[in-house]
Length: 309
Image (cartoon, rainbow, N blue to C red; front, side, top):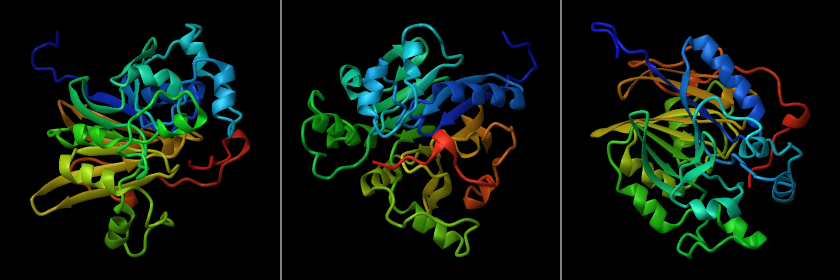
């Protein structure tokens, strides 16, 4: 029990951008984050394209665009174990054959849990909503079939109307995970800052279905992946509480692919990028492009940018 008069330590939650099979390096990054913040990471949330392939030959066959090793196999085989609970949603590059039997979620390895295709979970006292996959208008009303062919594997990475409706009914959500950005957030950032501190991505990035979802549910924070860019913007208005959005880069370097939040109860009291422990946001501060980290240099070696599917 906590001694009387002593406030509990803030809850440190870490989020990861598209891991794309790079499990070893993100474990190292999380070690560094714990050291810099002086407390353990209570849980890790990943925003899709985790690529938790059970066997190395599966990884090479289905993720042929990448040459990364199938590191998840070591965790599935018990050779290694994650140090903190990892919860992830599906992106559009996953082991969909394995995930098909876990549509409502399940543990794929000790400490590694797939949340499922759509829904809400209470994790460490927080209400976490989630929607896996990306938008493909042609398939949104088609049934989800077992992914036994390459075409069906690709289709498994698209969310369906029933899944969107399941999440659309949620309220009082502390944190929401989606893979693809909501449409219109780049325009919002441009309106707020006609001279942004860094080049903006395309106005047409994201999809309108996720945007309607966010505007309806109005989660306090929304975390996104897919487009391999860091981004920060707030959606708010008259009668609409703020939703702060953090879009994460793929897991090449930690500066923009790791995002953390510290909670007291269900309230975020600090947030930041990377593993240095530097605070990028506190209550009362604006959450916009000015809160992104300054990163110099480009990608190199096996970290060459991966084309977004």
